[in-house]
Image 1 (cartoon, one colour):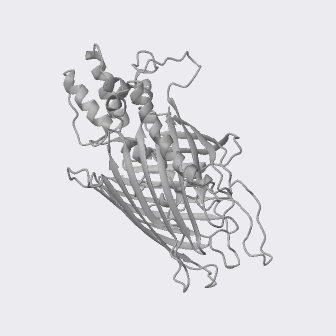
Image 2 (cartoon, helix red, strand yellow):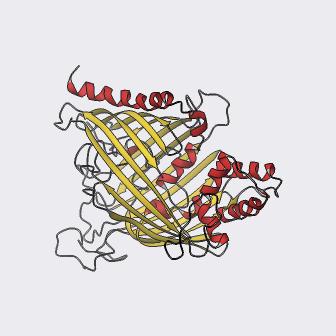
Image 3 (cartoon, one colour):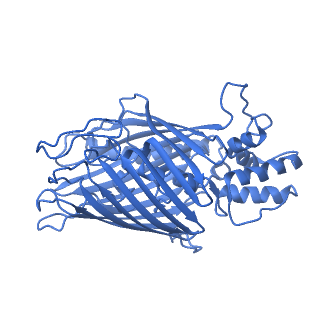
Amino acid sequence: MNLFQRLLVAPAALGLIAPVAATAAELNLNDVSSYSSRAKRSAKRVQSYSQFSDVYPSDWTYQTLSSMLERHGCAPINGASMTRFEAAALLNKCLDNVAQVNKEERRLINEFSSELAVIKGSLEGVEAGIGFEENQFSTTTKLSGESIFVMGAVGSADSTKEAATFVYHHVLELETSFSGDDLMLTAIEAGNFGASDPFGGEGDVALESNYSSGSALNVAKLFYQFPWKEDFTITVGPIVRQDDILGVWPSDYPSDTVLDVLTYAGASAAYGLAEGAGAGITYAKDKFSATALFVSEEANSASEGSTDGSGNGGGGGLLTEQGSDDVTLQVAWVDDQYTLAAAYTKADNGNLLEAVDADDYTATGLSAVYRPEVDSRLVPSSISAGYGWKSVDNSNNSTVMDETTYTFGFLWDDVGTEGNTLGIGYGTAEGHRDQNGYDDPMAMEIFYSMAVSDNITVTPAFFSVEKNGAKDYTGGLVKTTFSF
């Protein structure tokens, strides 16, 4: 067994250590792994107001609140869904009748601690047991965080970067409400992924969790969302990403996964996750959602750029001809069992002179999610699929051409024990071109996310990536995620 083979086997062995160690410590996984993996996944990729502001009957919070109200003789829930503040108001009223709470009810109180603080006017008396002195910290701000440790290796016949690496990505998020209905989100991130190493953002097997900052803390997101009229939500910010504004992320296949290329709902151009200054508006009523947004990637620069024949404008500004701007329109239909979405994106990359530019394009995407209501462990809990078309405005039929992409994602919840998830993803590793001699670029992964506790998951994974030009990669890793 050569060095790479030993490194490939190591992640799987390490992935088994965590549950074995937990057993040795007499840890009852059935008790501590009761969190909803689907809720955790949906919070990762999209942080939009319209998604986490509502409590649905399928959510653990809704179910636990309903059971608590019934147990303590409080007024029952009236309606199919509610906002987080409506849920917190019911919880706050019921607490007057409660002498002692159980484990799940205490967790529910912790979940709504920020909303309870707004209702009560302070954190005193909240069952979360966290108190702040006056003027020490805002009682309407919730701090959460996540640390991701990744250890793994990649093997390839034409690569010299096969050494095992141990890297991290750390995220702190501050969620602030000024009125109880709005949200300001500030995300501070740091990571030490090597940008050009296989796992980095510019690598051939980039991971979704990659972040390259040289361990420096960066403000990665800063935006404000607020409701307008009855069914509209407006988002605006100097550092905001496309998916922060979208009303719906049309895939259940989680961002807490392995390969980054499999996390774009099958349409990596339509859902390109452009980042910069931007704004958007979402209309959501019943099961229908529609969003219009724009993101200007160089809005922090006042340079007018160049129009001397060098190709792109090379400038910046907000919605200028010289700057790189992305405009996206999305319509979606969502219920408990199905999600259907269509998206259209126009990206110009400041291409004033209409030169050959792969980032000057129009793109469309069709994505869907199906959640079978079948009582069988063999049937996936969720099936996600998507297909995307990218049309380059000025192609040269050689290096810059039109492309298509697709992705399939399958999830099985509560495999082995409650809270554990098995996932399989398959799709294009890069845009496929309709060109003679062009190899189909494919990516595949399989992972098993193990809930060691409510706040710790260990995910061993194996993957394979085949890109055009006989660039084949295989590898394995163990990802440990700490949520707090």
